[in-house]
Each structure stands twice: as C-alpha cells, then as structure tokens.
Length: 298
Image (cartoon, rainbow, N blue to C red):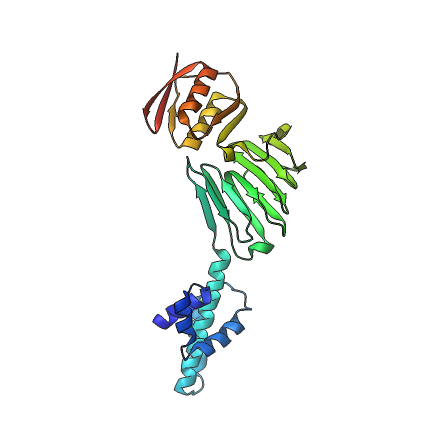
C-alpha cells in the first residue's frame, strides 16, 4: 500500500525533494520510469478501475508465468491505472477562487495572467492544458491583466469577453453587465450581439441592451483604488454595493427614494461613505455595531 501511495504521489508530481531523491534510489524506479514514459501519452478513457485490473489478472492466469513476471504484470496494471486516474483527475479538476464580502483577492493563472477579484466575486477554471484553453467563468467583478498567448475567454451569465493579451475590467451582477478596456482591445458578446471595445472605453449592458458607452477617466477601475463609483444609481444599488464592499448590513426597509446618485464613496472608510450617502439622499444613520447600520429619515 505504501508503494502505491508513493507511486501516486510521484505520478502526480507532488513529492518533496527528499521524497523524490529516496524514490529514485529504490530498486523499482527504473521500471516505474519506463512505464510512465509509455503511459504518459495515453488519454484517460471512461472505465471501471477494478474491472480493468481484474482483466489484466485473468489474462495473466491463462498461461503459466514465473512469480517475478506475475509481480511485473500487477505492477504494470497498477501503474497504468494510477497514471490514467491521475490524468483523468487533473483533466476534470476545477479550481475556484473567491473573494468574500469586504475582501479583495489577487491571484495568478497558470500562464501568469493576473486577476484581482472584487468583493463577493468568484472565478472557476481548469488548469489542465490551460495555455491552449484559456477559459474561465466569472460571477461578480474582476480586473484582468492577461498574458499574451492563445485566446482568453471570460464567461458570465450575462455575456462573454474575448481577448488575447490586455488589461480590462468585467462586472456581471444581477442584470448589469459592464466591461472597461484599459489596454489593447476586447470583444464583448451579449445575447446575439457583439462589439469591439478599444483601450480607454467602456460599455454598460442592462437586460441585453447597451445603455452607455463611455470613455474612461483613469488607468484602473476605481475599486482598485478603494473607490466605489456610481453612475445614475438608485439607493438600493448604492447600498447593495456598499454592503458588499464592507461586508456589513445596512437596514433601510422604511426608506423609498426615487433619487439617483452619481459620484464615488471610499471603500476603506465606512463613516465617510455613509456621510456622503446620507447627505445625497437627505438621510441620517446609526451604527448599531461594526457590522450593522440603520438608515433613517432626518
């Protein structure tokens, strides 16, 4: 059992330096190496591992063999099964990156493309053959610095963004789909339409219809600079984003406002943010705890 465990770790490339050194000195290593070279070019089919192993054993029993050959057949079968299993697992494994409410997360993809996830956002992708299949799923908002290479696709429930190597921001929340291009060009697809967005421009799509195409006034999205920007937003939209950025609850069930807000508030100082919003909507607020605020009419 221990040999099988070591073999699996070696095939998966998960051995430490000392473990690998000891493993390479084992008597069986030369045989393992030959089998790995042979099985490495195989594609992993859908098969029953136990049945595969039993078939090898049945074939081995049809002719008399020496004990040493019988051991070798078992070793070949086990190695191939483990190798194919490792390939199958790697091929179908999905990696998930998530930024909780009130947090931001920065990480690198296998090709060293850099992604910054905004609060309450998630990305899923597969590392298997990533450089030839750069495709991921986004829920929420993220800023991308894409390394040059094959086509890079960002899929959301509201639309798709396709690039080769560039810097851009994608936001997909509720029925609001926003894309801003900071470097290079991006192709934005939504519904049965598509547009080419060039550096320094942005597009906003709501319910499948373009509602705004605007030039950018900065080299990065505001949320990377600790600013929450709003453009003609309702009170509910403003408060939802503030709650997401700070990871707090804002009670406002007794307030209905038809007034729209355009401007920005900080994402690193909740008191300043609430003062700005309170003045804009003519409201007062009370902090009942670090995680809850109550809005009221003055």
